[in-house]
Image (cartoon, rainbow, N blue to C red; front, side, top):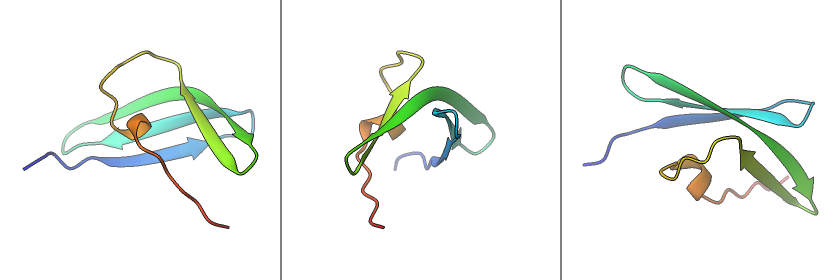
Length: 63
């Protein structure tokens, strides 16, 4: 079985973001920027890590 990861994306009013990923005994925080275009939210990481599960997914939000 895979490892369960809990992720939380926090958007700030200055167009920056934090992604907090929690495993059993550690928390990893990554930073980046974001912008809205039409009805979509785009997230940009500050680092270039290739194996990032959260940023490899597409999220849909209906308001």
